[in-house]
Length: 210
View 1 (tube, rainbow, N blue to C red):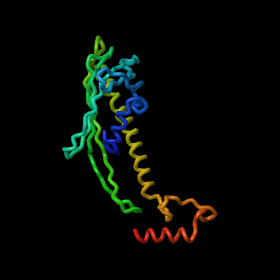
View 2: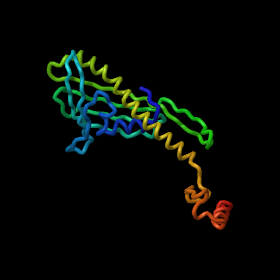
View 3: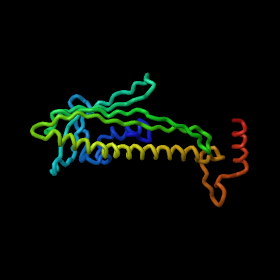
C-alpha cells in the first residue's frame, strides 16, 4: 500500500506496540511482554470470522527491528516477527517492509524554501501454519480478507502523523519574528509594556551590525 508520508512516519505506527490495536481493525489487543532474552516480545490477539463462526487467535512473537543500511541509495526499513507461542498456530512469521516510492519538491510561496514530501511503499508478508484441524483454505481466505483493511488502518494513522508534522513545520516557518529579538510580540494597548525609544534604538543597532 502507498502512504503519503516518510518511512519514519510509518515506522512510528508499527513500533508503537502497545497502541497498535487502535489502528489495526482486526486486532483486539497488542502489548509488550517480558522476554528472558531482552528481545522485543509482543502479545497480540486478533478476531476473525471463519465459516460463520467467530473466534479469537492469540500469538506471542519476537519482533526484530532491522537497522537501516545507510550505504544503499534506496533507503529501506524492515520489521520482522517470529512466533514464540500460540495455541492456534504452529508457524506465524513474516516481515513489514518500508521503502520510498516517490519524492516530490515544491517551493513554499511565503518563505521560498524547498519543501520535500515522500510517498512510502509498505508491504506485508506472512507465513502461517495452523495447529490441529483448523481448515487451511478457510484460514487462508480469512487472512487475505483481513490484510487490506489492516493496511488501510496503518496508512490512515501514518498519514495523520505526516499531516500534523507538515502543519507544525509550516506554522513554525511562517511564524512572524519579533523586532525585539526575544521572540515576544505581546502588546498592551497597542504597545509592549517596556517599549521605549531607547529599547528600539538598542535593537536597531544590534540588527544593523548583524
